[in-house]
Every structure is written in structure tokens, then in C-alpha cells.
Image (tube, rainbow, N blue to C red; front, side, top):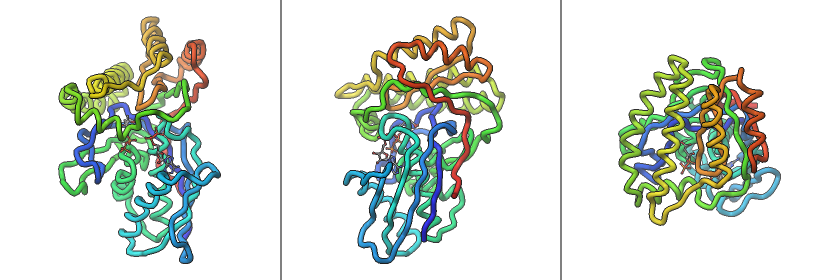
Amino acid sequence: MKATARAHTNIALIKYWGKRNESLILPANSNLSVTLDGFSTETTVHFQEHLTEDSFILNEQSAEEDARTKIAVFLDKVRALSGKEIYAQVQSVNHVPTAAGFASSASGLAALAAASTKAIGLSLEDRELSRLARQGSGSASRSIYGGFVEWQMGEREDGLDSYAIQVADASHWNIRIAAVVLSKTVKKVSSREGMRRTIDTSPFYAGWLEQTAKDLQEIKQAIADKDFEKMGSVTEANCLRMHATTLGANPPFTYWQDNTMRVMQTVQGLREQGIPAFFTIDAGPNVKVLYLPEDEDKIKTRLNAVEGVEDIIISKPGSGISYM
Ligand code: ADP
Ligand code: DP6
């Protein structure tokens, strides 16, 4: 009863920001991401009869109690699905900074969903796996698949129609995504808390929701047409609108730092010189830059020169879940 799975993180081009159901993790809007081959998690789950509780080792260290509890709550769902009352040792390695805005929760929970269901003897289809991973962390529902992925919000109260589907596979479009590392420290406001505070208190939230549905339709067309300018401009505008909602929250907050602004301005400056590059930012200070492979050298040179840039990690569209 042991299995190992690998999942990649993803970056949302149309953001998931706000839940319509907190406990089932159902999003207030459908959203879309690209899976990143540069960041991943590998997780081994070993169910054993003699264990009296679940244990969790992350990056070769015993995880803190609340991280272990989250794993146990997730494994309860897997146990309920399988009908087997058995505990597990979970060992995971993040090839991605943890809780710093690089989506470790997406790759982490997707890898956990895949490894735990296989280890306990369940054989789930991708759609079912996506629905399960969603209940660990919303963005994990998308990391089951490679390439370009849409998480459909669904309408049902029980969440059965809220799962991700692949819009285009990783080979569809040879774009690049640079993760510009400004800080790897753990963020002050988690995405979970940030979206909760925003949906509860920000008067800008209604405007965000209305426009996001339109953005999603536009970006799907841009991906189908491989229209990079269109995809990039919709991505950037959607990101800015998401971050604007946090400024309207009570108490207000922002994930940006001064370095974040510097990178954003550099990307806009690149465009003024005719180089198509667009940014997006999740719940953290770090910036991801979308560009085409032929512009890689220029993009790297310009981004490396920005004050505060610690590292640049380049990804292509990556693959979905794999088992080892
Ligand atoms: P991030 O930007 O890294 O996704 P979050 O605060 O949204 O930051 O999520 C981080 C949380 O995800 C961690 O506190 C932990 O509970 C969970 N997590 C991260 N990595 C793993 C992993 N490999 N396996 C299981 N859970 C993980
Ligand atoms: C800003 O999936 O980490 O990265 O469902 O509460 O675990 P929970 O949140 P999470 O939120 C991701 C928010 C985002 C946008 C996105 O990835 O779509």
C-alpha cells in the first residue's frame, strides 16, 4: 500500500480568487492556468496497519502540527472514498519554495491526491482526482493536468461538477514563463485568508467577478489562436484586477513589495521596446513573466538587472501527474 507521484505547480492566467463554498472549496469564478515544468512536488504515501495516526515529513523534516493536521484531514477523505480505516506515512519533497507564493499547495496537494489514492488501491479518473485534489487546495485541481487547464466552477451545491479539464496540452504552444524570485519567505496573508477577507469586505469584488467571466472567454480564444499579445494582455489585466480587490478589503492589504513594482515596470518597458512580455502575480511578492522563446536572452538580461532579483527560474508548459 505504497505509491509515489509527482505533480507540477501551475500559474493562473485567470485567477481563482474567492470561494462560493469554503468547506468543499468551490470557487466563485471559473479560472485557467498553465502547468509549469520548472517547479514540482514528489510525494510518497505508505499506508500501514500498525500506525495509529498519519505522519508527514516535508523536505526531510517533520512538518509542523497544522501542516500534519491538513494532511490528516485530506487523508480522511481518501479513507472515506476507499472504505479503509488505515493510517499513512507521508513523505514529500518540494522542488519549489513552500508557502511563498510559488504554488507549493497546488503541486503538494495534487501529488498527495495521486499518491494516496493509488496507495490505498483506488483507481480514479483524472476528473475524479481533480475533484479530490480541489478539496485539499483549490489550485491543486488544475495541477492534475499538463498544459493549459481550466477549473470549471460548477453550479452544484455538492461540488460534483467543480473540477478541472485540459484546454490544450503542453505541446500546443511553446511559450516560456520566468518566475522572478524576489523573496522566498513565508507570506503574511495566506491565499486562503486573503481571498476570504476580500470576498467578505472588498466593494471591488463584484467588479472583479463580472469582468473575470469575460476574461476567461477571451483567453480561451487567444490560446486556441496562439495569439500571444491577446493572451498576455488579458493575463496582465486580470492579475491587476485581482490585486486591486485586496486594496479595497478591510483591513486593506497587498502582496506587492517595492521590488514587485520594479519588475512590473521592467516588463512594461520591454513591451515599449517591441518585446512581447507580460506579467502575472499570485498571492505573494514574486512576479511571473510570460514571453516567447526567441526573446529569452533579452528578457533574462533585463530582469537580472532589476534591483532585488534573487533568481530567475524558467519554465515551459509542463506535464500533469506522473507515478514513479
Ligand atoms: P503557496 O504559495 O506555496 O501555495 P500557500 O500558503 O497557499 O502557499 O500554501 C502552502 C501550504 O500548502 C503549506 O502550508 C502546506 O499546508 C501545503 N503544502 C505545501 N507543500 C506541500 C506538500 N508537499 N505536501 C502537502 N502539503 C503541502
Ligand atoms: C492567487 O489554491 O492556494 O494563486 O483553495 O484556499 O487552498 P485554497 O487556495 P489556493 O489559492 C490560489 C490563489 C491564487 C490564484 C490561482 O492560483 O488561481
